[in-house]
Amino acid sequence: MDNTADIILREYESRFEDYGRLEACALDVIQEMLDTGSAGRVMITHRVKSADSMRGKLRRKAGKYRSIDEITDIVGFRVLVFFADQVDVVASLISQNLIVDEANSIDKRKLKDPSAFGYVSLHYVCQLPEGNGCPEDLCSMKFEIQIRTMLQHTWAEIEHDLGYKSELAVPYEVRRDFARVASLLEIADGYFLNIKGRLVEYELDVRKKVRSGEADDLPLNMVTLEEYIRSDGSITSLNNEIASISGAVLAYVSPEANLPLLKFLGIGTIGELKAFVESYRKHAVDLAAMTLKDSEIDELISTVGIYYLCRAKLIFDDYPEEEIFQFCLLIDHDPDRAMRKVRHIMRQKAAQ
Image 1: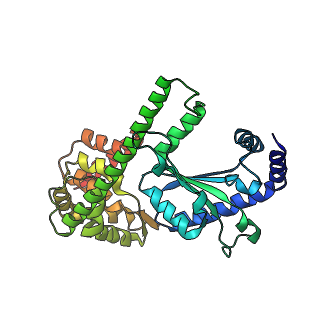
Image 2: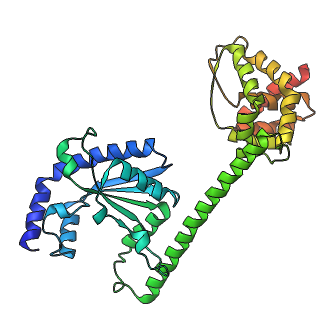
Image 3: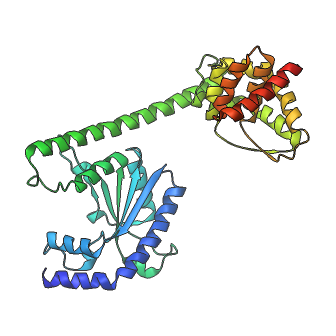
């Protein structure tokens, strides 16, 4: 390495602690920015470039850098998103909350030959704005943020791990296979985004039908069940009535685990669920009162209403012991505990 590279390395070593401080402070700012913004679910990785990595960079790009301040990726962050449309959302948040060096930032998505496939990522060179709680001396130091999808990241990491650096490094056939895999991942990113959009449209359609009373024929699934519970109010009021028996508070849990229970009992549409609630509500409250009236339970989960509705149907309908056992196994996979539940239900059944 030349004298300039040696000077840069010595400067790097003398400022290494400052780079660690910058990494920690910038991470707090980025995490806060993404948590309070509308970025959705993301993952953040970060690092300070190691001494070996610095030497390798200076060796590969001999003569390019005149000072350490021209190397903007000594502190680096990677924001990994699940869907391609999140990239621009994260980019917008970065532009709003950090100082972006536009001249040195690169959107590799726009540089690609439309007939080529491979590494795509948005690279921002940033600084912390003054007055954000970080030490002022850190605000003059630059760092890099890369934004890309999980699938883009997977491709880049495998490419790096295999040592694929240039067209001269591997045979044409291997380069072609790399491009084919990259194209498949790019297609997959597009499909995932399309599926996400269709699910959003489906949720909006379900909400409209539930609220307009046109949902009876909708199949029971996670989306329709959650929307029915949220919009109809009958299960919520049942939960509140049961909780009032012991003065308990309700803690929200997803109703997803109730879907196989309802399916077992032959409830497959929103209309059938509505009829189920209407038919067994009184029995469910009575059963809950037998259990909770003198109890000291101070918290119940928000699926308690559906639980007692199911229990009421098992007790008051003509279900044989073996079917009740199969139902209880859906709740508790331990056969002994499931059988104890069966015996309790059978005793209640006999008492009716």
